[in-house]
Length: 326
Image (tube, rainbow, N blue to C red):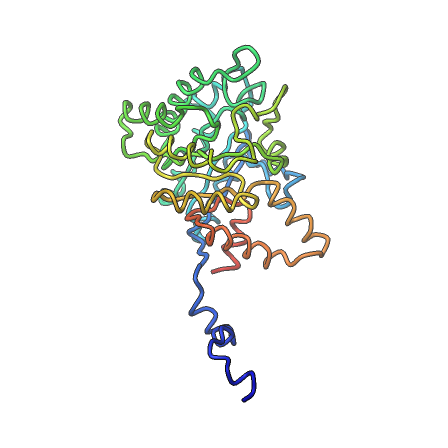
């Protein structure tokens, strides 16, 4: 008897052509899985390229409306807004003002596109003159003063018409403070997407150009997580869930797929991942050199996030990816 006569199980049978591969595919990527980040700046008719992130721009509100309309037409799940104000101060007061840059963007985009889902990043690092995520006490961020202000910022975003707030500063008790602020202002139904598992990462480099939030002293390692830690992610997520988080975020993505899977195995609430600026920049740079197939790498990466457990993916590739998978 030939050796090949004894082969009973042949997994290749289900890989022989595209039709069968599609039928047995375990994970699927859809446009509605994707959330597009937008960087909002003061002024009109501004579309300023971010050099370290080819294809991504800082946008005035009128230009952001146009990009948001494209995102809606392509079927993306929504957008998330980051604001760069005209003036910064020690407490990031623009983030709490009814006339703040993101609050105005929310109102105008929602007016033009009422069905588009809008998330707002709820943090102060883009708004403070020192680039940290809250007011400074001594040489570090004052945690408890910051979470009180976060409650105010979330209410300001809610009044502007946002659909979801997303605190990203990694302050202890931030979700509880925001939930209390929203509830007391009558926004009990507004959900919170918590960046509850956010690591201190070298992958954030290009974002600092995009959001103009490089710290003027020190770094954020005292409040963002150590990249070597795994079990801490479970503890952080559990704390935010107990405080009322509706969706949990892992940031960055590529180097933390094990964390995504850990959270998916431990908790039953929806899970998001942020495909961050450094991950985007590396793909774009290699593609521009002709070293990789950009479409193939992007779709493989985004599908990998789904396979690891993500329900939502925040990604600068959002518009391109939606075109490719429609």
